[in-house]
Image (cartoon, rainbow, N blue to C red):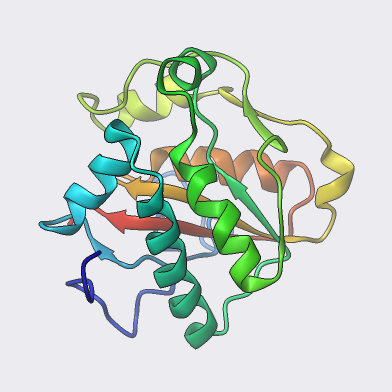
Length: 193
């Protein structure tokens, strides 16, 4: 596996890093973001091998790196939740790469994780070719919380493989907060520069 990630910085935990223009100050769904670095070579290949090549050991390496960053930052959520895949995409791929990262990350941090607490209630089109407004519209009402009583006052770590515009993470965080989560920290392995 690769060594250290490019783009690492001491300021990767930011207040309201993914605010969209419509978010009011203090009302952003994401309270903080912690990432390993930019989605650039050679680390982009690591994520692509995990996501499309089924190389699941890459998820363990990513989780170990995220755990180290989280421990050094003092970030410790109560519960880790992966961004869910659309049902058709999960069937096609056979696994959710965000869950494959979240599961070993939870073990390393000694926190709980739930692969089913957050679910997609409908299939959405791929976000890759969409601009930010289209991404937001595509994700509207896409997520549901299975057991809202479990979220009251919790700090949720929302795990994903890549953050591009932040639209998916923001929408998932919005739903988690609407069901009682006190704080949501986005935990994408990599972010697009």
